[in-house]
Amino acid sequence: MNPNSNPPSPDLRTAEREAAAWALRIQSGLRSEDHRELEAWLKRDARHASILAEMNETSLLLDRLRDPALAGADAPCVKIPFDADVTRAGRPGRWLAPFSLAAAAVLAIVGILSLYLPTTGENYSRAFATAPGVSQTVQLPDGSVLRLNTNSAVVADYTPKERRIHLTRGEAFFSVAKNPQRPFWVDAGAVSVRAVGTEFNVRFRPESVEVLVREGKVSVNPSPVKPSISVPDNSAPAHLIVAGEQATVSLPAMHADEPPQVLVAPVDAQRMESALAWQQGRLEFTDTPLGDVVTEFNRYNRHQLAIGDPSLRSEPFGGTFAPQGYEAFLEVLEQSFGIVGERHGNETILRRKSVSLQSN
Image 1: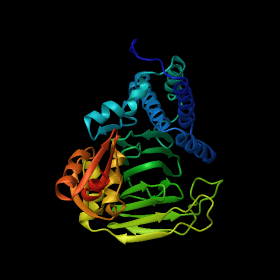
Image 2 (image 1 turned 180 degrees about the vertical axis):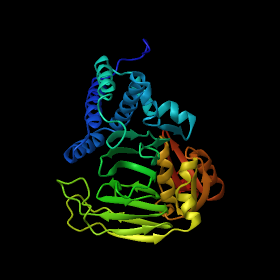
Image 3 (image 1 turned 90 degrees about the horizontal axis):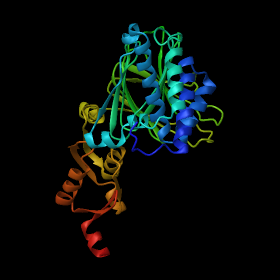
Image 4 (image 1 turned 45 degrees about the vertical axis):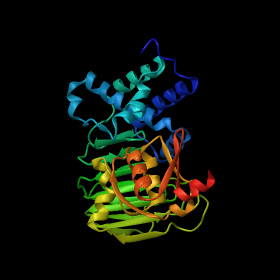
């Protein structure tokens, strides 16, 4: 630790201790009630997922140091920054520096215990998370691969009977290894997606869950949200989604009695490529409402864009940009769309030039 760095705050120390305790519980295997408690803890503070993910990665490194035979047990996850500056400023690894001695001791215990707990084979539990502007590719022990988009978090929980991924926020793409005897589930809010061997994308928004299938087929199982249940009811009526289709599941309010609504629509090759372009470090838009374009850029950047003229929200926009390329996006708007960006610190407000000039 750098002697000139500031000591961690009490809140951070508490978060580290709690994350260390969760790392131990995840290594031991989580029950259904544990998942509800973990989900609540992750939502309480945006830093929790990043700290927990780093602790899980550190425990894996300790495993390998203790026993070189474990080196091939779980391929390392790869964090890919969309932009180098964002990586330095926001990658989850920054939390390793201020670890307290108590947290480090717990990590050592995790490393020792993991020699006796199943980290390969049938049982597997681990958490992964990304910071804004960072993606992460994870090789799962069954041969499946998941890739997390910006500011996303999952908990992988494998048992002898099933493989289950809990997407607690953000977006993830899944390439699933076939194993009909051990189904692969992805839970996102009140929606559960089942796949056998396929490739599909899941995006978890506050108001909806979007499931886009690139290869194979999946079943989408929505269920009513109840206060005491955070894991979807897999017995609910399923909707079969095949390659080239997208299911959008609306999420009602927490205490609403109505079931989620499911809209299934075909997706052409161009829209499919645009929707998955984030995996190649691109944002692609084709006749996309400007309000949605702004929302996408805000997912990847600490500098936020806002629309000051409501009439701009529905204006169609097209183009390809780097996720951190909001400056290039603003330049296009100002030069070709009659829009001016009013910069105020870490926020830029978009207005029509005429509206902006009248206000001045």
